Length: 264
Image (cartoon, rainbow, N blue to C red; front, side, top):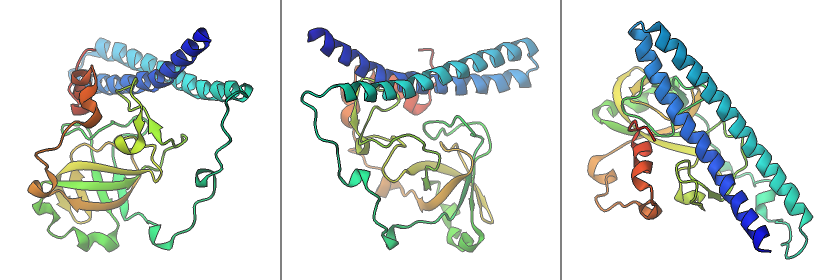
């Protein structure tokens, strides 16, 4: 029985390690791609060639890690179906039923977000991110941008439209593989309503276009709303780290959250 319990514990660890490895690799791929551009600008042909190969290998490794994540879920389900002792009845709650249609809960995009990201987006807004980041508001909402340029920062609310994974009420955030928390205690995109929220700096507004600092979304993400970030209203001096303060590697995690380059 002890060996069986140990095996389950190892599988649980692997389940959270796989997305950690995947996201960690993606973060370093983005760093390599930035330095690749710098090498290209300097005409370092040999360096560019080697970096391209390194990036390609990293992306291939991530595809295998992602497939391992899919397989472990399938094989865990298969294993569970073989266990009959102490099994709980299937969940027949509203989670498995069609959601009721509520008229005032329907949203429609008011524009689109354009970013350089097509298949590998940042996991947080980076103030100095390379590329062209724009919010394009539909023409009928253009008047709603009046005086927005007097603010430095805005909240951007959007629909995370490319989520293709199963929604869960508990998640392991990308940089905390050994920690499982409720989805509402995380920034995970795998949420019941797949709503995203980012804070970015306004660089300029022309007509119905807002040029911003780096946005952590895929190109073509549907825009749902924009709100101004107001200094003393939105900045809370007594905010804390919540469950993050208990992590042994919090300093490492904060490097990723802040987008600070590092070698480990």
